[in-house]
Length: 570
Image (cartoon, rainbow, N blue to C red; front, top):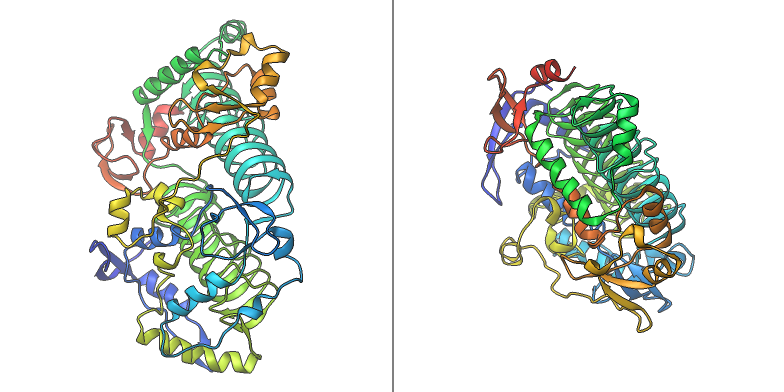
């Protein structure tokens, strides 16, 4: 995406310099709203791109769950809001019922106060739903999912079934312990970044592959073990061709069911991966895209992860067109700016966690609504301000006055500050992408969740240290029953976790050793395969060409430019 720098600014938080380009100005002009025939221009950002993203991410708790009671019925529930949260939280049935009305929490705007001050008040008082979901069935302990069935501890995205411990998925089934699996992945385990794969275990950045184990950046492959950078291959081990009989003999002696052996296999795989070349960036079927992990996209920059993105910038995990400064905003067409976790939206700006809506400004959790300004947790509404109903004429007359007020308080053009987020920094995915210790987070004006809520293990439930789990070959019906009714203490974090029956059946069927670490620790280990979402200047280790890559120059991997990489692997 060809751009020309028009202005260089300094971030008012971290003081890093960043550019405003001609394309940026064109975008801000297109999205600037018009009321009463007057355009109210969106100003250029005052934060650098990373600080803007970090601020947005402090509003998203994806995977931290708590036991608490519904504030309406006092019914025990599982929620992303802890029992000590100052926010009002309802269970799903109550929240979706007619037993309360979010407009009852509406208020007139007070021109003697700032917008964010007033928005914080209405956000805290308006009841929140315990977790976000839609059209789920027998899906326990999930958050931010749609059309998910028969799944356990699954987070973020949609249209899947029979998943356990899976994060970021789309149209998949029968997978365990995976992150970023899309487009009909099936029977995959402990993997990251798979597309259209079947029965792939311990594999990363692979697509259209079947029966692969410990593979990295392999595509259209089948029956491969310990392989890197292969295309359209079958019966390969450590990137060497075997006959079908040789391969079947080799795999018959491969014992993934022994825990210590599996640990050795993982270490061997990491060493082999490191000894191979790596491509500078991963883009597929893209036009004028220079950033990483993009598929079927065009005219994108500073954008990562996902597919079908057109004219995107500073967009992470986004799908749609004309999306700037957003995270996890998908199936969105024509203009979204400063958005987080929005779905099927149109022309929404400074909006958090809203679905099926259009023409929203400074709103959170608004569903099937349109023409809202400064609203929280509304459904099927239009022409509301601070959760108060107006006529169309009243709305269009008042909004310009409110924008002018926001200009005087320097709030117009800024996303919601982290200080009024309902979550502590360490509860959110901001701490995943921009990790901070408590002292540093507080110094940077972020909130922090201090309290550790212990997992209440029932008195009747036995406890066992993970190191004492039996090997797969030693399992019998009695041991299996004991495992399913036992709290297992993680060997790394000492946090208790469980093994549920579908999970145990999967391990037995595919001869995989029982996990000895808590699912959160397993997730963190998978994320080590993800490079920083930042491009560095580096020279190709083959031809010395200057290039952009997500591998910093001090890393030990050999990084090739796209041309040299393709010559090596094809």
